[in-house]
Image 1: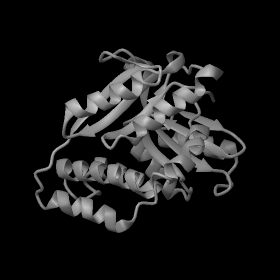
Image 2: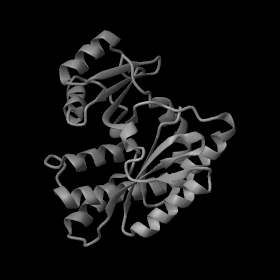
Image 3: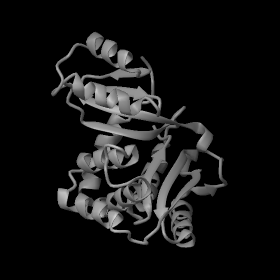
Length: 239
């Protein structure tokens, strides 16, 4: 089955993210805090918090950090962050979506704009590129850890409500609708699958190849965006 593959992009950025582990933990703590504050500290009754806890575990975030973020929310902290989405184009005309959690929209908007403009990109207005992306559930099963045959995996995920499967020598990549994501993820765990990555993400409907002479500039722009303390996620249509 066809679809946009994320796995190599994830793997390709892993080493860079390892070097920024402390900053990543800080960002995830903020997301956990906001999820727990909005829906309560019990992940069993708070799906948004459960998603953030999955994200924390995927990043190998220490349990103490997770507990502190939840306890802070449960303790009635008056901290507040706004969810903001920025849209634009990177070098070579590649669509880029930036999600942020910020306590100062002006500061964050300025930082994101600088990252775009200094690296050959430009900010767009609201809705300028969002329509090019779909919110999807994304689950990765590494084949080293999951020895099931492709036909069996396909049958299992379709029974659970998934809508797409991509297979490579390394992984099974499963795509779901946002509403079906939790049921598919939990169902796979119950069936004994070892999940390497599970998240709600933005998938581009089409990808754009970054010109060779723009690749270094494009990577620099993405790095600058991801380095921003307020930026939670950066999604691109880059091939």
